[in-house]
Amino acid sequence: MRNIKLKIQYDGTDYHGWQIQKNDITVQEIVKKAVQKIVNEDVHLTGCGRTDTGVHAENYVCNFFTNSRIPSEKLPYALNTYLPNDIVCFEAEDTDENFHSNSSAVKKRYVYKILNREFPDAVMNRYSWHYKYPLDIEKMRIAAKAFIGEHDFIGFASSGFSVKTTVREIYLLDVDKNGDIITIDVVGNGFLYNMVRIIAGTLVFVGGGKINPNDMTDIINSKDRERAGITAPPQGLCLKEVYY
Amino acid sequence: MRNIKLKIQYDGTDYHGWQIQKNDITVQEIVKKAVQKIVNEDVHLTGCGRTDTGVHAENYVCNFFTNSRIPSEKLPYALNTYLPNDIVCFEAEDTDENFHSNSSAVKKRYVYKILNREFPDAVMNRYSWHYKYPLDIEKMRIAAKAFIGEHDFIGFASSGFSVKTTVREIYLLDVDKNGDIITIDVVGNGFLYNMVRIIAGTLVFVGGGKINPNDMTDIINSKDRERAGITAPPQGLCLKEVYY
Image (cartoon, rainbow over the protein chains, first blue to last red):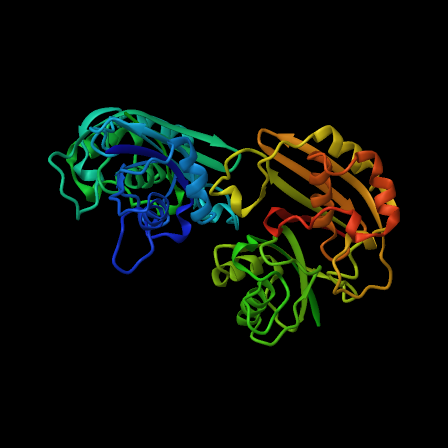
């Protein structure tokens, strides 16, 4: 049986995240149905992780097993004829039978965008968190350094998940500003539920003066969700890359 | 009575254009209802022109008469609390009683975007025309020159409109490419129904070799809709500026 790996991009605005749900429309359901139309058999579509309602993905990886003989290079074109405008498949390849989109991943990169100005933007409202109060980028950068390395990030996770360990390693956490847009760029070996959005919300608290950047190491070590910042809204988050 | 001028930005993806319609949701209806909630009276909201379903506006101008005493500088904040995320008011000012958003306009600027690459983009699908075949920008630029000046553009209008004259003057028509995105930037004293989209569709025919750029003057002078290109899809179009 073939194990086919797909790379897709989606605008999460109108979806209840990736994972199939009983009553809500999700990206996994839409992509799975498109795949099944092409391979003419039921497939199980394995994703590289859940994304929440409104979260976007530039480079989401998923895979499925099939007996179909369709050449993998033809798959993206075939899929895009069935996919809606806000979901695009841009790559497909045959991969080895042991490949699993989620458990084979060794690193993930997310970007969180903040529109930092007085008035919101009718387009960026879909792709960023509008935060109108001034933010001190330098303070955010100082605080960001404390996240680098291996830590128990249980204080930066929402409840309602089950994982073997809450220890994760963060390799990179950059804060940049380009015009009105602040970009938080993070790479880690894995992320807990809502972890990136809580890191973003915490860095915004630092930038706004609610948290002292020099307290960040203590806050992480305290493992106390109450000491971190709020969970930043979903629309600012985008899965940029999954590494295998 | 005060005559208040508003500047609004909207993502037209989910609206049936500007103008109020019986059964479809439009931007004018949404903004009018928000204004009425604030000024506590019925108002007639005058727009700077119709926009089609899916067309966007960065700088749409509208005005209304009111007895309300609300300071104009407070209006955008008040309006944005009632407006959905894809419609934003960013400016309001008292203007003279003779100001009319449409008939007072002397110039308008539109930008049409084309995503020119093999695969579509899940986000740009909302804001551009995905055209996957190669386009010759130089040919498009040669053809664009023929539109500059005063011409009878009846051959570049869709039927179903009534105007005193179909003569319009185009001051600027630039074609630029930045990465995969081709931008058609046009400024004129006014535009006929679908005129910018038909100009965009015609320039794409030129770029794709279906129309010879040196025939463009003849095509304009022929006043024959059949000789122009197709009407480019709405989502690539954005009203950038209205001049008074």
